[in-house]
Image (cartoon, rainbow, N blue to C red; front, side):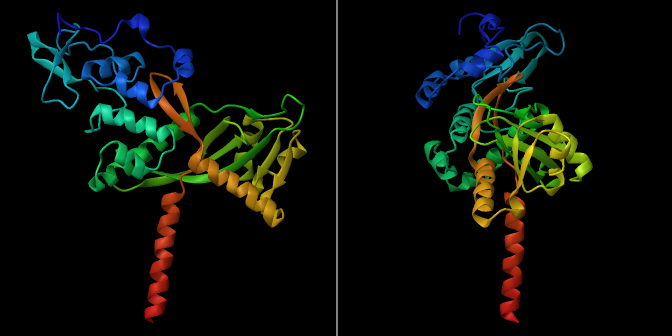
Length: 312
């Protein structure tokens, strides 16, 4: 590494938001781009996943990028004059992780393409002992998607190009989090959201409760007039009296219709992932209402109760 490196890349080649959204990359291209440590850091800096430069905390002058064999990524920022050093991951999405950056980037790619956890573990050479790590990172990615959707809701629905109502499905769910995915879950909070059937447009909004007074204004704010709303959220069915909506309550529909709409929503929660770049780092967006853990706890409680009844 000849000379001092004060920036990972020329700021002029850092990708803009439109360039990030337009970028297409396959797994082979990703592997080649991050094969060497320095190339990997530069690739990440171009996409604003890592800081492009760092100032010394003492002299406020640019620190230089130094090789650091003891570090998991092979480099660190350092100012020799003031014995200042800091990780290349500082103030980034990856700061708190001990996994190699190369493995995290590959994991993100594979997760975005909805590959099973067992397959991801095999491709990344992660043994059975890594199951907890993979689950934690999967949950962490979901949290990032959720937060981005809540921060950046968009209007959906309306009429399509043929003048037909766009179908929008709405639902509510209780979300749970752990701080940095460690320790016990923090108290859950309710999230209300909607998605266009057959499309990628959606919105999610955190709400204090599920009353009609709370949800109706959100429907009117984020769903365009003319929309055909499919819902089992009883409290929003009055909005078509004030705004030009057509609503279908799946809880009162025939069983085959109800099952069809419920399956669509459930598939959306679990499988509908797509790439969306925003702000200073790439984020992965999808509409996933996180009820799995609540459901698992209920199933375990029911199994325990059944076992106790059998013993009696």
